[in-house]
Amino acid sequence: MSYRIYVILLLLVFSLNVTANQLIGSIAELQDAGVLLVDKQGKTVVSLQAERAFIPASTTKLVTAWLALNHWGEDHHFKTDFYLDDATNTLWVKGGGDPFLVSEELVILASNLKQLGLQNIDAIGLDVTLFQPDLKVPGASATNNPYDAVPTAIAANFNTIAIKKVAAKIVSAETQTPLTPFAEGLARQQQLSKRTLRINTGASSHNAERYFAELLAAVLRQQGVIVAEQIVWGKVPPQTAYYRHSNSKTLAEIIRPMMTYSTNFIASQLVLMLSAEYYQRPANFADVERYMEAILQEKFNWQRVSLKEGAGLSRENKLSPKQLVQLLEAFRPWKYLLPEVAPGIYAKSGTLNKVSTLAGYAVDSNQQWNAFALMMQQSVSLWRRNQIASEIMLLLHEQTKNN
Image: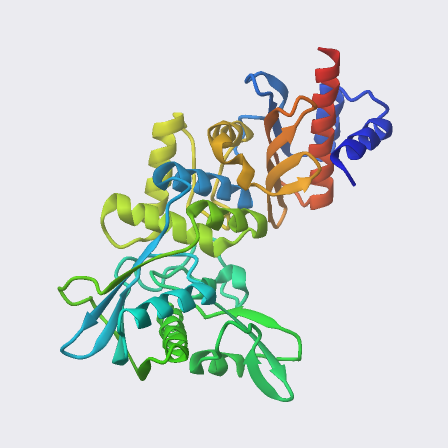
């Protein structure tokens, strides 16, 4: 359905007569709700409990995305350094927190290492000192679901593994990802059918790091490099880097899927890297909280803000509709990174138990992007949230027509 046809249908459905008061009434019927809609000129169009603090859920990722884009810029590429210790013939990897070291990226870096002359190694060494070990994301659960993957200084495939069973045999569910011994061992602990199952690598960062090393070894072997089985942990030797890998994805290209698929792992990696860089010490969530609140208070003069982490998992996170709209005004240069959740509505949703949020932009008939935030402390379907956003867009069309 085209955008124009959709708008025409909306006008017919709502009888060409949606007012701000009617929209507020519609939202108020949901109980325990707050909303703020501001037009492109900064004028308040709709406001209900706009300064009340709500649990933002995954709309927290808007804050994380702004922090990252504002600090590094959308064209930033994350780096991972490799060192070759000639004395022990160990290839060391210094984890830089890159959240997008997927299998395809490992193939690229393995090919580059091969072209540099790497022929055989006796061990893979991991320097993971950028993050504190065994980090627990505030609000995360201890499940094997991908959205509960632990953050680590070095990670493959978002610290998740895709597996399936074919003819009683466990295989990788991704053609680009070899099945490693750790992945196979983890798979045998699961109840597998022929369907694909994606799980995280577990609560221990040591397991996630081991999986990265095994997968790196596998793709290096595909390139013809002879790799022994040994994996060691420590600090890289004091020598010049052998190879610096720059991820082929830009920060903007990483944030877009984080918004579309609400990837908690990417959001956690970003805020941990930001805090580690800011405080110059191993990343931890106490520093994340301190960093996020300090920067937001400095940039927006927010006197009351509570953010324990950057993915939106913690129920102790608190933001108001007004704060989210202020953030969205600053986010305008990167508004194109938000998914179109309904025709003319570009937004990020958030859902926890009895928490439903939606924040982004409604595009009016003059193609102006108008910032809004909808926050509710109750369970409201995403369909209903998108419907309210569409009513917001309709109200903007009405106002544009009458002005």
